[in-house]
Image 1 (spheres, rainbow, N blue to C red):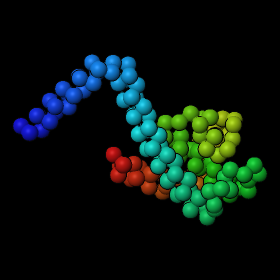
Image 2: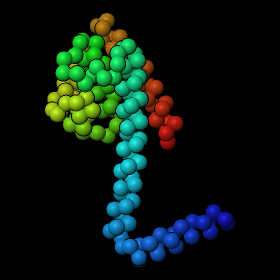
Image 3: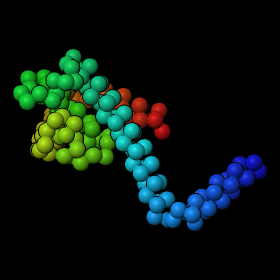
Image 4: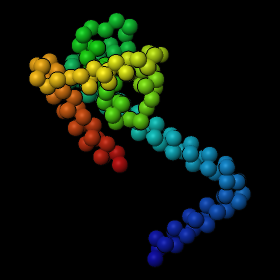
Length: 146
């Protein structure tokens, strides 16, 4: 009963706000709140991905933004890109911007490379095992955020 009263009070206040401010302004404010909430959520996921991948490969996050990458840093960045694309609703360009690139092609190349991985090849198997461990960690983390 008390919960219903509170719900009715919120609805009443919302209706008064709509009348006073206007539907468009209220809608825009709610959309902005939603966008900010999504951005915070996405930022947490991206941060976890970068941290987890870098720890797995024993590199510093800052190395992934350098113009010339060693092989291990390239592999690390590729894995980050794949995991970000899977777990966060971001465009190719937004993902490439995370790594200081203006061109979306690094994301396309990373996705193609991942698609062509074969578990029968030793270095691919190591990559895929690491990917699966981090992927599980991210899925578990996302459950705690909900």
